[in-house]
Image 1 (cartoon, rainbow, N blue to C red):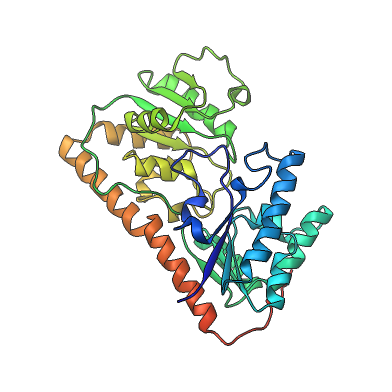
Image 2 (tube, rainbow, N blue to C red):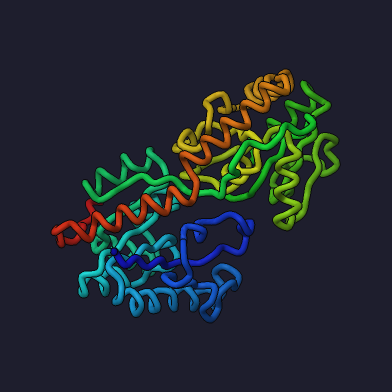
Length: 343
């Protein structure tokens, strides 16, 4: 049996049921940064920087007893562990989350240059979209796999709820606030009955009066209240600038609420239907009106389809199995040559 060590941490801004740390099947084989000194500290604080460095040290030490080490936030936690583990013939796997330009554009801090240099000692990369698979495979041929981000999925589709003219917009990172504002103002004119529930949105970036009549701004919600609000909305809209995967999208699907997004690279890997691509207010209005006209039977069937999509595509159990299979294939391989990046 392959000995597989996971290394990472939990982001404090993630919902309790979300985040890539859920990839870890057992705490026994996990370097958990949240349990090390400085765990959970504000991002980029001195305590946080110390914590990320300690994760790398602990990964080196514990990795010596494993065949494969899977680092799922290498953008933050890696300093020298890939080179160190390579000396001891331990296989190293990255899951990469950020834009390609983070890794491949020239000009960066010393810390990032070190991280980029360490990439040549990585045995395999996991990307979170098929779009990224193309660009990464061109640099690391034969060393890249697409495995989608995971979510905890319901076993069955939820029973149809009362239709409400509510659309949820969630999150701040990689959000297109110009598009968000255009959509809200379009609905104010075309569908004045619709209320937008903004959760985790930076309201100052919207640049319209905070008493906008079709908007309710929520503060940070606990897991129970957040999931309830998602399920109460009839649609969730994510105006995005980038997404290899998106926790808010996965949270919506796993709550039984369809998610619509504008067209950005990789997003079609996570939308269960292309009918939920909406690039402006008019296209989102068409999505909303189609849902509003659905019968209870049609709504129930759609929720069943969402649950099936979730279970087959992004269920964490499926992600676990694919990562374990990848680790086993790396151990079985006789190829010990380091990966050399071609920038």
